[in-house]
Amino acid sequence: MITVENIIMQLPYSEDLSVERLSRLFDKMSESYKLFWFQAIINKVISGKDALTFNELINEMIADSWYMVSEYKLNLGPSDTLEALVRYIYEISGLKTSEKKSDILNYLKQCKDKKVSEMKRTLTYHVPYRLQAPFVETFSGSEWNISKQSLSSRMNQEKRLIYYFSDICGIDTSIFVRPEWCDYIIKNQEILKGWIQYNLIIYLQRRNPNVPGISSKLEVPQNRKLNRVIKYWKKIMEIVPVTDIYGNGVLTEETLSIDHFIPWSYVAHDEFWNLHPTTKNINSSKSNNLPDWETYFPALFEKEYFSYQMMWENDVVHKAFIKCSKEHINSDDVMMKLYREGISETEFRANLENIMLPVYNAARNVGFKNWFYSHVK
Image 1 (cartoon, one colour):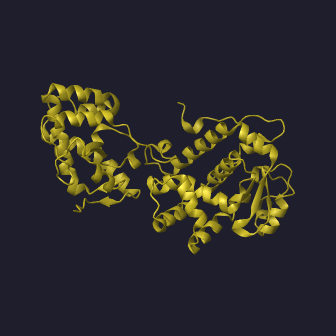
Image 2: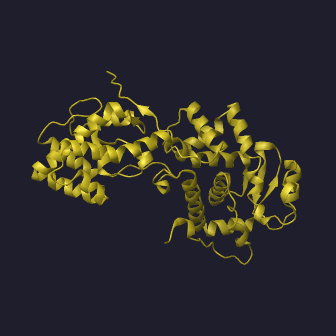
Image 3: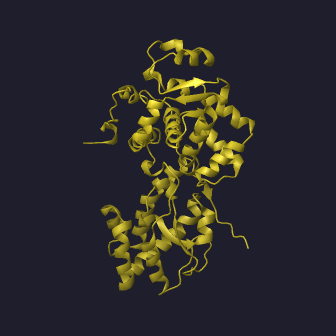
């Protein structure tokens, strides 16, 4: 069987550069830092820069990992400083989990918080140097454990490095990417970005074994395509009033919105069993939090069973459901348990709870917060 783990990505050959050594950058990797550091270098070189400071690269690392940590609650590694730094900045900054990358970078450029500076400094202790270990030929082992001034001087004597060090002064230390490597990066940028993403997915899957849809959680969340589900509920609303499960208000075409009961940020899918109608305001207020199970699951079940009954009693609703099912029901087992004809209320509730509760608990265990609707007049 072919899996992500046994696919080998081949990097483009170069007569002048040691691509074989480049391909070993992420070997024996126990933390995420190397991936985000090299990705930051790639991004900056593609933008036209070859002289970079530690500080601007760390800012790029924070911005690139922002959505994974703040929105999707992914674990970057045991006692991971980058993850802790993103969480701390999220707490103090007022930035949204879905903030634009440019806005995150602008905030970081202006941030004077002492704890942020200290944590940034910690990220520069090893990765700027150890990343290039496959290229280093003249020393190894404990010889890495010397002052940064001495280490950078020794590395600058190596002949094959991707980048060299200059102006050694903590977080403001500079690196210069060799022109040959800049050309290689720019020429092969799409392949290199795909290679980093491939390694990042493998790493995150190992660190987050119970989290679904890792490959969909590397970048800013996108708007969901739920048009067929919206049309389905509108067909029902034309026949009978439909209320929201959180505030119990009657929905209208103008206020209708479709909510993922268990946040999309965790499940990374648009399966029909996890979708229900609410208002745009409530959906925005709920954000990517978990509705309190004891409070809202009974109401969700009632809404879902009501939908099920309407689907089998009304031909127009049934036709709308068939269209939905082609896009939003991707499991034959779920189709049999929740949508075949003749399911009793008791059986429906048990089946829905058996499908949803393990996923709900897994989302709670990785850090998604409990939520109650609070009506503000």
